[in-house]
Amino acid sequence: MNSFASLIEKISSAVWGWPMIILLLGTHIYMTVRLRFPQLKVGTAIRQSFTRDNQAQGDVSQFGALATALAATIGTGNIVGVATAVALGGPGAVLWCWLTGVFGMATKYSEGLLAVKYRVKTRDGRMLGGPMFALERGLGMKWLAVLFAIFTAIAAFGIGNTVQANSISLLLNETYGLSQYVVGAILTLLVLLVVVFGLKGISRVCSALVPVMAAFYILGCLVILGMNWSVLGESLKLIVNSAFTARAAGGGFIGTTVLMACRFGIARGLFSNESGLGSAPIVAAAAQTRNPVRQALVSSTGTFWDTVVVCAITGLVLVSSIVAHPDIDCTQGAALTKAAFDKLPVVGPLILSVGIVTFAFSTILGWSYYGERAVEYLAGHRPRRARVATAIYRLLFIAAVFVGSILSLSLVWNLSDIANALMAIPNLLSILLLSGVIVKETRKYLWNNRLDEDSNETPPTL
Image 1 (spheres, rainbow, N blue to C red):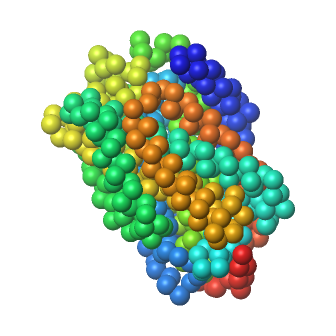
Image 2: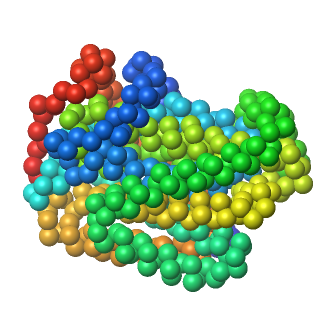
Image 3: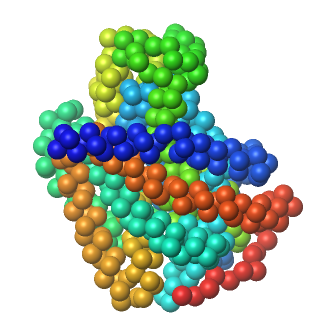
């Protein structure tokens, strides 16, 4: 098992080398420039996310789609993921993670636009979309669409399932002494009770859970930052300097390099906000929206809330805690997270526990939908075959929740990083090759101030 884990770690390191970093961050920057910095429209995007458009075509509201996407993205990547990046890449990883989020908003916008632009309608009236449909309908690359769907179905077991379940069980075991087997069994049952109701059930739970859990966690982080107020300036300086220099930031960070900070920061940034991954567009395609650009704007706010806000606050909490308390173990992500929140007596561990449990649980719910839609695509849209395939996949997905609760964390993280990269590559290619379409739609609805105009395109029925 140790040899296998070592092999997976080597593959993960190779996959997340400079070529992948350049492709991902390069796409973010390229789309940012080509779309005239859509990040500047974040205010408009946030307002759109709370605007109901019941007369438009779709299965759930724009906010419902955003909440489901946020549920899938605001997970352990925001807490344990950031801590793992800091432990492996040093404080500089926080800046790279944050920059991935800022520029990633343009990519998330692009994904959402293509998802609505090329979505289709099933015989029973449901909307389906995502990178597989953009690749097939927009580029005629059916083979690449199939590969993306396969990677998505596999990745759902990592980023959206076993990693989350593992984080929950490990935390509750270390904090409250609960058996990982018992936690896994309870978590599996809860996931089962929600997933059986499909997208509307998942959306309903996520719409209620996401705002509350995020607000509770951010409030706790702000309290800790208040306690570390005297070292915040030094912490910010350390984060920036470590992102571009190989200087050590304490014993735990000796040996970290710029490449390590960049690699782990960007990898964890992608794990956290999923910009460029191609997952969020799958649910964005089901949104009730008048035109592709409205939902594209709403989708971009997911990255804003997830990384630009939540991950940034988490990273600052971790680094400031290390600076304020040099005795903290900063060589292991989980231990670093626990130590930082333990500095806030009684309330700190509770905030961490509730944050990880709710974040991770909601992520499992969101990714169950992504995986099922990928399997439905692979089934060829034949109703009977699709129902059987998704039912089998759902059972396997639910069972994986229990398995993930008792697996080795490092192995799970490395497997997830590999699966993420395999998803991201075909999705990023679709964005780059269809960038002309994205610009055309953006000019029509956003740059010409026609966001309220209905699209005259009707999704084809399968």
